[in-house]
Structures are given as structure tokens and as C-alpha cells.
Length: 343
Image (cartoon, rainbow, N blue to C red; front, side):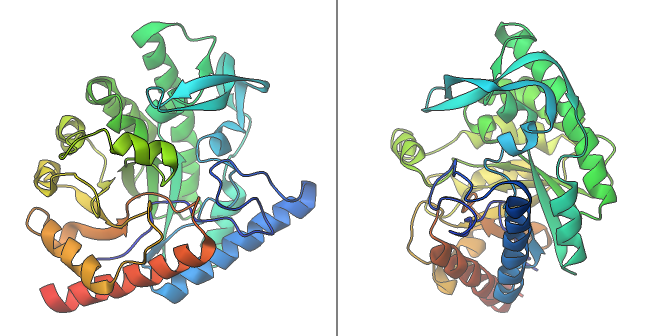
């Protein structure tokens, strides 16, 4: 019961990139950078294993950003002429690349890091990709057309490319392919109307576990300020969970601890594995095993024991490394306590 996992990203070591930043600059280039990325990946695999995490990942150490790390291998995107654009419904501004032509993959995107991770751990391995709707929200489109229909066309074009890479990751030995869709919590009606369908296209044909991660964002000021405007109950999940429950996606990762998400919304995911966020990524305070076990206990009112995975609310990329390491250790200890308590 209660396997443990991370949502995806982990802090980059100071010798690899700037620390405590969501869009960090690399500290090296060329072959030296590639070696440093591989070293950081191996480091975090070891940290996760030592902490007792059951489903490990590469920590996205080879990606400057969880979306742009995928886009770097996509033709039809202009990175040379980035434009400033409001993303996540103008929650914050970002410099984003432009879609200027038909999209196609230039080759494998994440072969090196997936194969490296698979060769160096016997644990279940999860690999994360950005979801199609979230990619659409993180680029400026100059090719597929304006309005909703243009966004849908662009999303399904990205879904096709994501599917190609996801199938290759499965062949690399990845056990869980997860698509990150924070946009589902912003454009809820569109997520239910066509976002889940685009997500299913991205996961089409996979026989490994498929997952989607939907959170309220990294623990950065823009997200913390936004959450302060959402009131006493955060019911964004209510609009998309029924569509996900009907979908072919196996697992759903959601925010729980220190959030205002009504836990009973998990009922809407009947038939799915639920990765319950028991670690707050917006605070440096280390959760106690008791707090984590209590969060798991509350979730068990709505999620069968065999379907509950203890996870982080979101990625840990902007955190200090020592805080992230302590939170991983707490996650494993809290899940162990929950196993004793609820066996």
C-alpha cells in the first residue's frame, strides 16, 4: 500500500544551474553540460532511493523548464525570437517561443536521460512530459490559427508528437509516463471539452501506466498570490475530474496537503489510481510523518487503499536542495507510518 512518488521536478545542483529559479541558466555548455546533467540525474536517483521513494524519476535535471525541455526538439518552433506573453490566464508573464510552421519532432527528445535512469535503478521509473493543453498555453502560435479552433488544432498537433516520444520512452523501459497539465486548473471548461481528448491522444497506444498531473503550480510568488484569490474552497478539479474518470488515463496526480481542495472531490476519480499530494511545495517547513499519515488517512475516505499513491503536490524545482531532500525522506517515513496505521 501507499507507494511513494514525486510529481516530477527536483532542484538542480548549484554546479549544474542557477538555484531556486524556475527558469535557471546553465553553468556549462556543450559536452561539459551534458555530463553535468547526467551526473545530476544519477545524484537524484540515489537520493530518491536512499530516502525510500518507490517510484523514482530523473528529476527533470536535463530540462531548463518542464515545457521548453520538450520543445527544444520540435521543428516549427522559433526559439530565436521569443516574445513576452501572459500564461496561465495571465497569472504571470514569460518569454515564450513562437510556433511558426508545421510541427514535427527532429528526433528523440529524452532518450539519453530516460535510458540513463533506467540503467541505474531497479525501482519503478516515472518519466514526465508536458501535456498538450499546457504546451499550447506556453507558446505563441503564429501558424495554427486564432481562437478556440486554432488552440485545439495546435494541441492535437503537439499530442501527436508527445505520443511519438511517449511510445519511445515506453520502449526505453519507463514504467509510468506522466503528462503535466497545470492548464487544466485554469481553463477548466476547455479542459473538459477538448483538453482530456488531446491528453488521450498523447497517451494513445501506451501499455505502460499513464498519468496526468494537475496542480496549482510551483511554490513561486505568482502561484501563491493566485491561490490567495481562490477563496475557502478550491473546486477547479470538479470540472475536469469526471472527464478524466471516463478517460483511458490510469492515474491522476493532485494537490492536497495545505490546500483548500475539498478532499471529497477525489470521489470523482473512481476507477483511477490517485497520486495524493501530501508534501507542500510552497513551504520550506518539513512535513512530519504524522502529518503525512493524517493526509493519507483523510484521502482514504474517498480513495481505495490499493489505488492511493503518496506524492508531492507539485514539482520541487525552485526549492533549496536540502529542503527537497528532507521532504523526500519525510514522504517515505509518512507513508510507512500510514501503512502501519491503515494496514
